[in-house]
Length: 137
Image 1: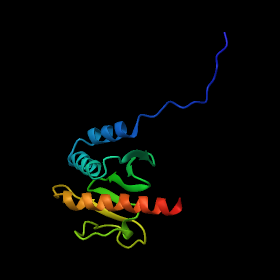
Image 2: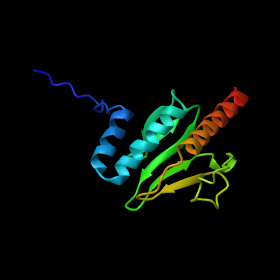
Image 3: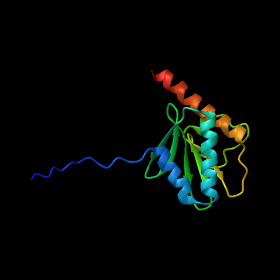
Image 4: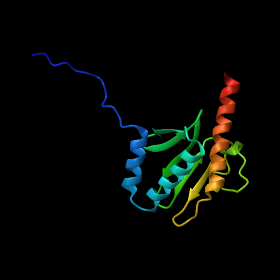
């Protein structure tokens, strides 16, 4: 009997399932907040692509990364890859303000999310990605 060895890795679950599992695993306000921002992002850009990168970070993309959704003990952080180039009339960005590229929104327990402003920011990020993508094509 011959045993064949394979170098194939077990297939990882789709990103959406991994994000679902993260939300459930957190089981507290951070999971509920991550689920809420995820729903807002999906409403803002219905064809957004969900990814799972860097050993467990939810990422939402559309022509490039829109934002990541990191969870920490005291905060859910949405980091926008090109946040410094985005209009933020509602002043949602409250973290990572010193950089030249990224900007972040730290959401703490009990804070209300401005859905309209977040949708506008997500749409602006997706549009910026598509604009840069069409220029490079």
